[in-house]
Amino acid sequence: QVQLVESGGGSVQAGGSLRLSCAASGYTSSSDCMGWFRQAPGKEREGVAFINPARGSTYYADSVKGRFIISQDNAKNTLYLQMNSLEPEVTAVYYCAAGGRCFRPLRVVEYPYWGQGTQVTVSS
Image (cartoon, rainbow, N blue to C red; front, side, top):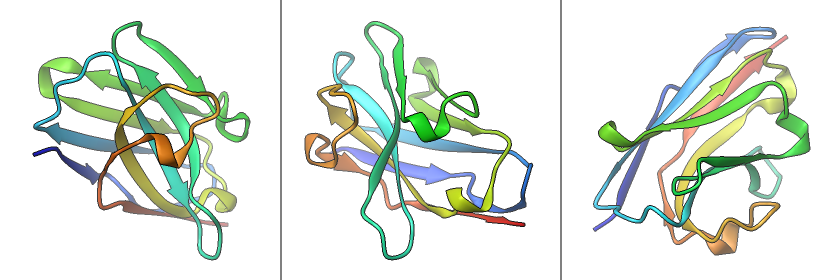
Protein backbone atom coordinates (compact mmCIF):
# COMPACT_ATOMS: atom_id res chain seq x y z
CA GLN A 1 0.00 0.00 0.00
CA VAL A 2 1.43 3.34 -1.06
CA GLN A 3 1.55 6.02 1.57
CA LEU A 4 2.75 9.60 1.11
CA VAL A 5 3.13 11.85 4.13
CA GLU A 6 3.92 15.54 3.72
CA SER A 7 5.50 17.76 6.34
CA GLY A 8 7.23 21.11 6.57
CA GLY A 9 4.34 23.43 5.92
CA GLY A 10 3.63 26.41 8.11
CA SER A 11 3.29 30.16 8.25
CA VAL A 12 6.00 32.46 7.01
CA GLN A 13 6.33 36.10 6.07
CA ALA A 14 6.78 37.24 2.51
CA GLY A 15 10.32 36.76 1.33
CA GLY A 16 10.88 33.77 3.56
CA SER A 17 11.54 30.13 2.72
CA LEU A 18 10.09 26.74 3.55
CA ARG A 19 11.11 23.21 2.67
CA LEU A 20 8.38 20.65 2.26
CA SER A 21 9.09 16.95 2.64
CA CYS A 22 7.15 13.95 1.43
CA ALA A 23 8.02 10.59 2.93
CA ALA A 24 6.98 7.73 0.67
CA SER A 25 6.38 4.15 1.75
CA GLY A 26 5.24 1.21 -0.33
CA TYR A 27 6.14 3.07 -3.53
CA THR A 28 8.79 1.39 -5.65
CA SER A 29 8.52 2.88 -9.14
CA SER A 30 11.65 4.54 -10.41
CA SER A 31 10.28 5.40 -13.83
CA ASP A 32 7.13 7.30 -12.97
CA CYS A 33 7.27 10.88 -11.80
CA MET A 34 6.72 12.29 -8.36
CA GLY A 35 5.41 15.79 -8.06
CA TRP A 36 4.03 18.60 -5.98
CA PHE A 37 0.64 20.19 -6.47
CA ARG A 38 -1.14 22.96 -4.60
CA GLN A 39 -4.69 24.06 -4.07
CA ALA A 40 -5.63 27.52 -2.90
CA PRO A 41 -9.07 28.24 -1.41
CA GLY A 42 -11.71 28.37 -4.13
CA LYS A 43 -9.29 27.28 -6.85
CA GLU A 44 -8.54 24.07 -8.66
CA ARG A 45 -5.56 21.94 -7.74
CA GLU A 46 -2.59 22.86 -9.92
CA GLY A 47 0.77 21.32 -10.63
CA VAL A 48 3.89 22.93 -9.23
CA ALA A 49 6.81 20.68 -10.13
CA PHE A 50 7.76 17.09 -10.87
CA ILE A 51 10.89 15.01 -10.90
CA ASN A 52 11.62 11.94 -12.98
CA PRO A 53 13.62 9.62 -10.71
CA ALA A 54 15.03 7.57 -13.56
CA ARG A 55 16.40 10.53 -15.52
CA GLY A 56 16.79 13.06 -12.75
CA SER A 57 14.97 15.56 -14.92
CA THR A 58 12.66 18.16 -13.43
CA TYR A 59 9.84 20.38 -14.55
CA TYR A 60 8.43 23.52 -12.99
CA ALA A 61 5.30 25.52 -13.56
CA ASP A 62 6.14 28.97 -14.89
CA SER A 63 4.81 30.57 -11.72
CA VAL A 64 7.49 28.96 -9.55
CA LYS A 65 10.50 28.77 -11.84
CA GLY A 66 13.59 30.21 -10.22
CA ARG A 67 12.06 30.17 -6.74
CA PHE A 68 11.15 26.52 -6.06
CA ILE A 69 13.43 23.51 -6.28
CA ILE A 70 12.25 19.90 -6.33
CA SER A 71 14.62 17.15 -5.26
CA GLN A 72 14.63 13.67 -3.86
CA ASP A 73 16.65 11.47 -1.55
CA ASN A 74 16.31 7.92 -2.82
CA ALA A 75 17.96 6.43 0.26
CA LYS A 76 15.29 8.01 2.44
CA ASN A 77 12.43 7.61 -0.06
CA THR A 78 11.71 11.28 0.43
CA LEU A 79 10.70 14.02 -1.98
CA TYR A 80 11.41 17.66 -1.20
CA LEU A 81 10.23 21.05 -2.36
CA GLN A 82 12.44 23.98 -1.41
CA MET A 83 10.43 27.17 -1.67
CA ASN A 84 12.24 30.49 -1.64
CA SER A 85 11.24 34.15 -1.94
CA LEU A 86 7.73 33.26 -0.90
CA GLU A 87 4.86 35.59 -1.68
CA PRO A 88 1.28 35.62 -0.33
CA GLU A 89 -0.13 34.30 -3.61
CA VAL A 90 1.54 30.92 -3.04
CA THR A 91 -0.61 30.33 0.03
CA ALA A 92 -2.27 26.95 -0.47
CA VAL A 93 -2.41 23.37 0.66
CA TYR A 94 0.53 21.57 -0.95
CA TYR A 95 0.18 17.94 -1.96
CA CYS A 96 2.76 15.34 -2.82
CA ALA A 97 1.80 12.93 -5.58
CA ALA A 98 3.39 9.85 -7.13
CA GLY A 99 2.99 7.48 -10.03
CA GLY A 100 2.54 10.18 -12.67
CA ARG A 101 3.44 9.82 -16.32
CA CYS A 102 5.57 12.96 -16.44
CA PHE A 103 3.33 14.96 -18.72
CA ARG A 104 4.03 18.66 -19.00
CA PRO A 105 2.29 20.50 -17.48
CA LEU A 106 1.44 18.28 -14.52
CA ARG A 107 -2.02 16.84 -14.64
CA VAL A 108 -3.91 15.81 -11.52
CA VAL A 109 -5.58 12.86 -13.24
CA GLU A 110 -2.22 11.29 -14.10
CA TYR A 111 -1.19 10.77 -10.48
CA PRO A 112 -2.84 7.85 -8.64
CA TYR A 113 -1.17 8.34 -5.27
CA TRP A 114 -1.59 11.39 -3.05
CA GLY A 115 -0.60 12.63 0.36
CA GLN A 116 -2.95 14.37 2.75
CA GLY A 117 -1.49 17.82 2.11
CA THR A 118 0.33 20.39 4.18
CA GLN A 119 -0.74 24.02 4.61
CA VAL A 120 1.57 26.81 3.49
CA THR A 121 0.57 30.33 4.49
CA VAL A 122 2.56 33.39 3.46
CA SER A 123 1.70 36.73 5.01
CA SER A 124 2.63 40.13 3.68
